[in-house]
Amino acid sequence: MFNFTIDKTPKKDLSNDKTYDLIVLGGGPAGLNAALYAKRKNLDVIIVANEIGGQLNNTKDVDNYLGFKAVDASRLIEAFQSHVNTFDVPTLTGVYVKEIQKSDNLFVISLSTGETLSSKTIIYTLGGNPRKLGVKGEKEFQSRGVSYCVTCDGPFFKNKVVAVIGGGNSAVDAAIDLAQIAKQVVLIQRSQLRADQSSVLKLQSLPNVQIHLETDVLSFNGQDVLKSLSLYDKHHESTIELDVDGVFVEIGNIPNSDLASEFVLRNDQKEIITNELQETKTKGFYAAGDVTSMPHKQVIIAASQGAIAALQAAIYINKGE
Ligand SMILES: Cc1cc2nc3c(=O)[nH]c(=O)nc-3n(C[C@H](O)[C@H](O)[C@H](O)COP(=O)(O)OP(=O)(O)OC[C@H]3O[C@@H](n4cnc5c(N)ncnc54)[C@H](O)[C@@H]3O)c2cc1C
Image (cartoon, rainbow, N blue to C red; front, side):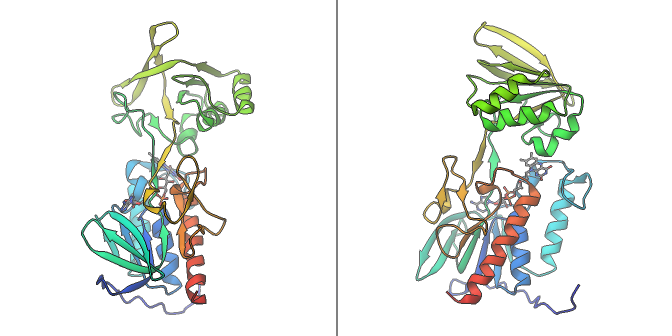
């Protein structure tokens, strides 16, 4: 620990003519860590976010963030935010970013409040959301049996019966992972499997995996926690009641990347493509966290990408390009 003094003077001037070194868009793990690293590099930085904490607001417990065993997600958000607050980073919350433009080598952000902000660099961390099935009971049993993340919640289902919904690579890989943990895994797909052939063959070879194709999920059922799924087998035209301890919905992620489309390249799932320094095709425009094509959507990964982006933005600004 070095004993240097960091300028903690709040700079909360939001007037139109001020130019920030950096605007961090998003206040999830990626954005908060980006702001922390940027401020410690003495950048004049502001965070703009609809809601601090991002997707962590949608879950109860986090069991895999280093240094925090089985922590309540809201406590993790508080810990992140209070750490950032010690550096007095100005933060605009409860606002939406509406548009990003570039003018005279500066980025100009239009907000839902009608204000605009300008900066030399942007770190874009608007995240995303897991795609939902949208059937009865799904929302009610989220975090009480229904999960969207095997890496996050798989270990809670050791020796239990779980279902995985979906037929793409992420669903098949999730089912393969879960087969090492759970007693039984049932993969449910409304049509045919779309995953890579090698993954499908691996899945089919596992003794504790059952595959139901051409099967729709009708509802998630239970009392306090999820107990069963109601399914419709389209091939046999019959309904099935499947008892489960947990369900993993693995039907994709919806990244909030549209606002960046002019400045970045995106893959076919609309995730932003960056290099290993979180740079995009536009100089001074970085992206980090779940909005990127990084396949592992995790708090620690989003936070570390935010740090990389901030360090890179500091180098870019100090070079005065
Ligand atoms: C139910 C659930 C459980 C999870 N459990 C775990 C777990 O146990 N462990 C783990 O490591 N990971 C877990 N994750 C994944 C983890 O939450 C994400 O990987 C992480 O939050 C990604 O951080 P991020 O900063 O990239 O994006 P996000 O968390 O998505 O944050 C995006 C930010 O952008 C803001 N934003 C979006 N659009 C706009 C806009 N137009 N204008 C202004 N602001 C905007 C949001 O308000 C938010 O502040 C879970 C995810 C879910 C959904």
